[in-house]
Length: 234
Image (tube, rainbow, N blue to C red):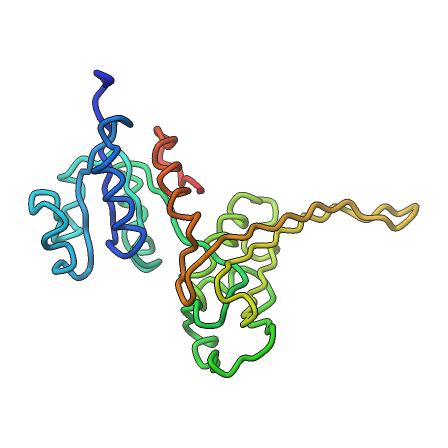
């Protein structure tokens, strides 16, 4: 085992992803030189019997006292909205949520989209198509991939990256992400350079997070070794 100081990981949120990450840190932390700094959850009772009392953070305002090197937010976008800047002042922040084409039961919608009767959808249906900026507050649990792309493509940003949210009953156990990058039109022949990729992530019916995503989060934690107060995409 390395003699280097272990990197301390704070986990904000103890849902499916949070439980997975806490278990991984407890199981493989020594060999990867990481340890838990704290675990916070809105409902603290959920941590009882599974998270040691000394590692439970009951008041998120006290996160700095735990001296975490990396804070992983796997709770709700409102947490990052409120605490994101403060998290970054104390450590590195991992932003974690994925959006994709999936079964109607797997969406958690808010705002204007919350009124849609997803249970009535029988065929592939486009719920939204337009700038990512307008979509983010309507589907905060489902648009992390789009938001990350908008931040990475800084010359386009949230207003010029287009997001398409699709509900498709024919894919009950998959989450699909299609990314198309398009270049400028060749004025001579009208041809356009483009690259299209598709990710197929197995997922249990009705869940927000696909199976492969859990391992992706864990891998991202292991490679995140300090980014100067910047957000780290995974």
